[in-house]
Image (cartoon, rainbow, N blue to C red; front, top):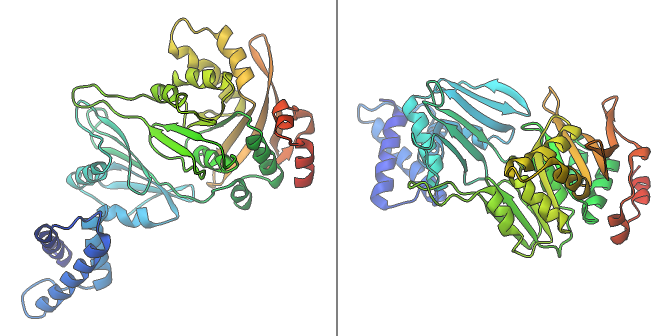
Length: 408
């Protein structure tokens, strides 16, 4: 047995004997590891014990094993790593700055299951044969998704999407070359005026980051209610209530769906409602809320801004046979004002590629739209003919053309 393994066993015994909480008392655990390592090193000089070759790295590895998530902890601590996934115990990948790379980490099947169990401990969510999928949040806000056999063919599939905060406001996106200054000024004015915004894009395109940055432009006196499957949004306002879904218990009851949360949010006196991601019939409840005059934002998976509108017109139909497209399409046209489409380039750079203005008219089942900003020659360019004057700007005392002119 290696020195690290022996030292880890000793530290675990000391933790149990002293009744320490590895996750809740990290500083005490780190001091305990240092003390135990120094004592072990002294003993190894006189007894037939494996020598500690690199004291600093051994102490860190032991600390990660008892207080962190073992071999994955260095990746979780690396600010450049955005996502980690395990296809099999010997295939551990990560995405660094949007680029995929295979790591040199090799685990055992038991280590993978032990790590997942440790990650789920703080979430209260479960994973077993009757519930082979799990979505949970880690203490640092990272999102965990796990699928187990026999849904997967052989190995546990684990995804950890880290919450890497690189942008808090729209001007941060400008600094990161994800948005032009003129487009940022336009979106800031749109949020302040209370326009309803749909954020679209593929997985890892930056939709949640965009929602967070847009929410920073919400007035400080507004009450914001957010609903999500798993907590990911970080809203800077003071008057905020965040809600997330809940899985059913072992008896199969107690589930709280996203659709239920949207309905409950309407009873909480919101000025704004933000739905982290619209996937199913909750789209109908979101439309009903916006149609009642409530300002809102949400995101949806889509390949383009137009595809996002088409999808948001289709999802409410999942609510039941009594919901028709003749009702949904005009409602979408009257509710949403803008679609902001995000995309990720092959080099990992995330950019806003289109901002689409949504009109109120519907002809032959198609909603009137016009691009306010669109990508031309790899640059997000303002399109003056696409700017639809909105009464919400005037109501908020905003001259949108002046805002665009000053930011140009």
